[in-house]
Image (cartoon, rainbow, N blue to C red):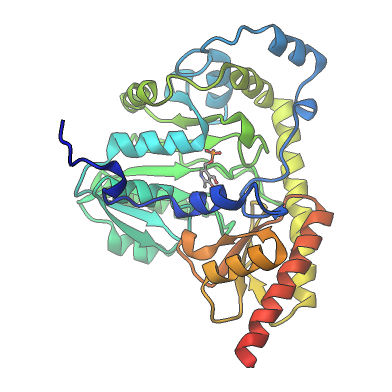
Length: 376
Ligand SMILES: Cc1ncc(COP(=O)(O)O)c(C=O)c1O
């Protein structure tokens, strides 16, 4: 064995956003750095009969790639997909990890949407790839994509901005990937969280290098189940599954049963509508707050998610501002610099009106103080 090997000193890009949350989310009084909504309880989710089934089920490994019932329910959410196109994973996180582990090799070029959830960005970096940020402007994407591009990664609807691609934009992105034979990874965990629009269409379609990932964490409010999935064509699904066997063997059997319940069409609609309602309420609170505190902050129009990506007006970095808010107001928000856009804070609005207003009032006090410091 090579005695000089030290894994803690290898060049490694940590997942800054997740690490920041992990450090403080259970220590602050109000955590608004998370990106789901007030999550569903087992009582909200399960009927008496579901509960009985759960209690009677042996705590054994479920099917390694996900139970047929769950894969069938997932396949039904994609046009012409079959249960064989689906792999059930431990959250969208494992899904994206498997995609990157399988597809990326050192030297590959990866184009990643920004601002965005930086999982692909960090994984690509750690795999020895060259990663390029792409602001959602198709001209910029056209300029960046070339025959060396291995993967184009999008998050749609987007975290943190809540924007949604039009169908023309989706077609163009897919065409650009197909032109150079690149894989297209669409992280669609916020599909179903639109405030008013129809459910966002998936990138899943005719291009055989499209890989869609999703989970029950965000639009369904079930992050604790740790259930996600990948939808892809063979032989990709097989390749992902081989790595899934190494990583986790399978998702949890209790979660698999609850996922089956959550994905029943009527239950699914109930969960999505619940999330949308929380998001709409939170957005109304944010709009009122911005109106009352003009000059302190602003927000661009969002179409989905319960995330306010708020631009603040002071010269401090987003980490400095978030740290001040954490220390002085006991509220955790996510610094925009961890999502590729400084001078912004990502504030989760889906915890009910009372908590959101209380937290925003505290945030305003800190932002005001920072502005006064600059003036002094
Ligand atoms: C865009 C996006 N994708 C994937 C994930 C991973 O979440 P999970 O593993 O709970 O599905 C997150 C979590 O914040 C996210 O925001």
